[in-house]
Structure formats: C-alpha cells, structure tokens
Image (cartoon, rainbow, N blue to C red; front, side, top):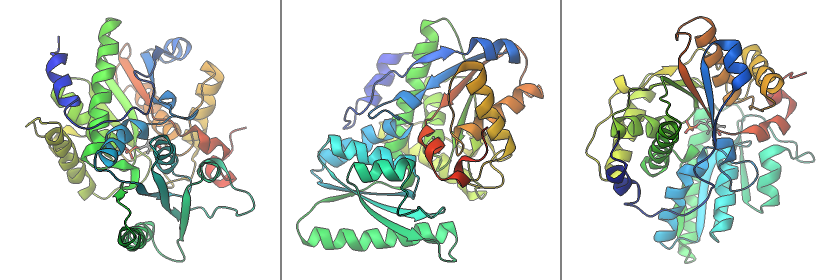
Amino acid sequence: MNNYEDVNKHLTSRPKVNLGFFPTPLHKLDKLSAQLGVNLYLKRDDMTGYNLFGGNKIRKLEYLIGDAVAQGCDTVFTFGATQSNHAMQTVTACRRYGLKPILYLVAIVEPGEEDLRANMLIDTILGAEIHIVSLNGKTEAEADELAVELAQKHRETLEQQGHKCYMVPMGGANPLGSAGFISGFVELNRQLEEIGQKADYLFHSTGTGGTLAGLAAGKKLLNSDTSIISINASPKPFEHYSKVAKLATEALTYLGSDQQISEEDLNFDQNYYAPGYEIPNEGSSNAIKLLARTEGLLLDPVYTGKAFSGMLDYIQTRKIPQGSTVVFWHTGGVTALFAEKEIVGDLT
Ligand SMILES: *Cc1c(COP(=O)(O)O)cnc(C)c1O
C-alpha cells in the first residue's frame, strides 16, 4: 500500500493549471486479451482533453502553463514537427489561459499550403502564429536547432516591446513537463489498486523522453515493480539515455523529492520505429488495423501504432509471459490519421 498523501504533497507543491479530464479512463481490452493470452488494459491519454483529441502533452502542460501563468507571461513559444501533437496541444492550452501561442515547426514532411491537414489545420483554426523551418538539406537536428535560434531572436524583439515570453521545449521535455507524468504514474497505480490489479508491464511510445522520464520517476517515488518498456518513435543516440535519466531526477527534485534515477532504471527499445520518424511500417499499420478491427479503437501511425506493434511482438514471442497484466499507455496522436498520405501509410 502506498502512502499517497505523502506523494500528493510533492505533486501539489508547484504551480499547476487545469487542462484536462483526470483521471483518464483505464479499461480492459477483453477480446484482444483473450486472443493474446494476457490481461491487457488501455490507459486512455488520448482522452485527456482539453479539445477532442487529447494526448500525453496535456499532463506536461498543466505544470508548464502553470509556471508560465505564475510568472505573468503573455506569450508562449514552442517547437516540433509541422504535424506535432505537442504543438497543437500547447496552442489549445494557451488559448484556455489567454496566452499568445507562437510555433516554430520543422517541416520533415512539407505541408501543402492549399491543403492544410490534421494538426496543422487545427493550429491554424486556433489562430496560432506559425513559422515553418524547411529542411533544405539540413538534418532534423540542425533544423531543430535553427528553429530555437529563430525563436530566441523573435523573443528578444517581443520582450523589447514589453511582452513577457515563455519557452516550452519540444515535446514539453523538461523537469516541469515530466512532473506531469510522475502524477500520471501515480494516477494509474491508484486506478489499478481500486480494481485490485497490479501491472506487470507498462508499454508506451517514447519520443523526446519527457513521458518516460516522468513514468520512471513515478515508479521510483511509489517504489513500484512494474516493468516500463518504452518503444522509440525515432532513433536516439546513446547519450539520450543519460539525458532522460537526468531529466527524471530533475523532475523529482522539482517536486521536492531527493530520489535519483539512473540509466539502469530506463528500458528503451529502438526495434520498432524503422524506417524513421513519421514514416509508417508494416508492423505499425498491422497493429492499427488489429486494434481497430478487434476492439473498435484507434491508434496513430507515428507513435502509438509503432509502440503497440512492439508490445504485440513482446507478447507473441513470449518475451513477456502469458497471463501477465499489461497496460498500454495510449498517448494520443490520432489526428495523424488525417495527415499527409506519406505519414498515414496504407491502412486499408
Ligand atoms: C509526443 C508523443 C509521444 C512521446 O512522448 P515524449 O514525452 O515526447 O517522449 C508519444 N505519443 C504521442 C502520440 C505523442 O504525441
């Protein structure tokens, strides 16, 4: 039994705004569980709110926008790909709290000016100020750096005019953002306890690592023995793991805990994202169709489809034993089903 009162003291120790509908639902997938021989639960962060499309960034933004509001900011900058779920969720959060949203987005897939789709269309409807950084022969990492440089210059100009600006990093991946997922891990464990269950395994998609850092930190705070398996949506160099461990420790520090996370606490799997970010593969397309046709539920091609395909592989190859209790954390992103054809792939 966990001492939630003690944990709650940490979770409420910092400024936070309300952006979603929590706790998000947790429910069993009965048909798929029977088919796979495990007890499979879905944690529905595709239903966090604040708009119809939800997503995992809402938890992070509760602390990030909370901090922006506490600091008296009037403008928020953030970053991502043109179809970034994080950017879209940040814009909705800004609108709710009266902050001006400015996006610097890298065009991994060039958006059609006459045919705005998915998150680009939603960002436009919400009236975000959008700046596109084209690749033009640059690597994604170089373009990401350029986006931050351009935004810094823009920020300086606005601050000279008397505005107060707040920078949210790509994916909301900083200690404040990860604090939102410490809170998420605690939320999941309370829900499982209420129904007399315990997760042996937790699968989720990882990108910037902010979600993973929060989950790993939450696991440490609750002294939980659930195995968290983080399936990459994009390739990451070895140094990424130590950065995520540091991020997790800093998130704990931010909430007033002195616990530490090391690389051994993290469990990445890079075997399922190929050929690359925003490029579908057969496994992810099959996973999307399987969940849709077995349970009537949707995944996205960029993140959750790939993570779900990884989880199916672990179960089907008996890397995890039959009869295990498995939670798949649905991190959202389903608007990508309405993105450019090259992102969606063949789902027919
Ligand atoms: C951003 C995102 C992720 C990855 O979360 P990180 O915190 O960046 O690792 C996973 N799934 C979806 C749908 C996302 O939008």
